[in-house]
Image 1 (cartoon, rainbow, N blue to C red):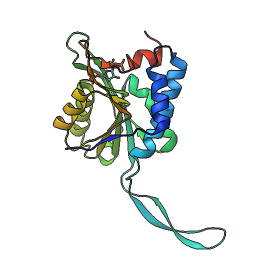
Image 2 (cartoon, helix red, strand yellow; image 1 turned 180 degrees about the vertical axis):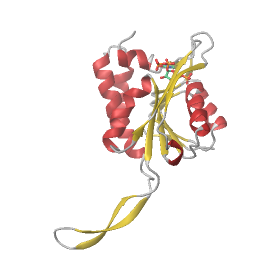
Image 3 (cartoon, rainbow, N blue to C red; image 1 turned 30 degrees about the horizontal axis):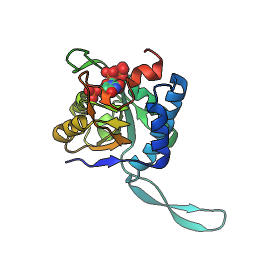
Image 4 (cartoon, rainbow, N blue to C red; image 1 turned 60 degrees about the vertical axis):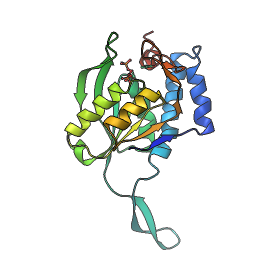
Length: 209
Ligand code: PRP
Ligand code: URA
């Protein structure tokens, strides 16, 4: 089973509480999401492999470290995942960005795909899938299926808030995928929204409420 990492750093918890508040407007919501994505990205990249490199400092020669291994790609699930891309890119500026467009059918709560554009060499990259909300897990699971069908073997999932149902779904359908969350919430309501959650992330980011 994939590992579940709950990154509950005090700064992340503080910013997440601000995002949860219904009074927080789109401008602040977007900014907080970008900041949390960057803070979570720091932990999510902790295990990236390093290799030795010989360099000369102004003082002497030394064996230093630089990133090794596969190149990275960030794949937001549209729309809300877009809000996490910039924060991650500020840490990993050379990463390529792919996009998977999914929306949840309001009746069935099942994801419907409407867009997919991925870097051609995605199968050779370490992929970070981003989406603030892991509710039923249907959208993230479908995105992971899509990536694996394109040859991706090394993929991790980064969300802000997860429901137990969504975590279970990913762990069962994608036992190879490590999940990174800022919080695990109580449950889903009858509309499959996360409780207490933060509402509809896409609508709050883009002001389409
Ligand atoms: C939200 C969210 C996830 C999905 C989570 O997107 O950003 O993609 O729902 O729900 P699930 O785990 O039950 O699949 P939504 O479908 O509302 O689209 P949007 O981002 O365009 O608003
Ligand atoms: N999508 C959201 O944006 N919020 C939820 O709580 C569930 C799905």
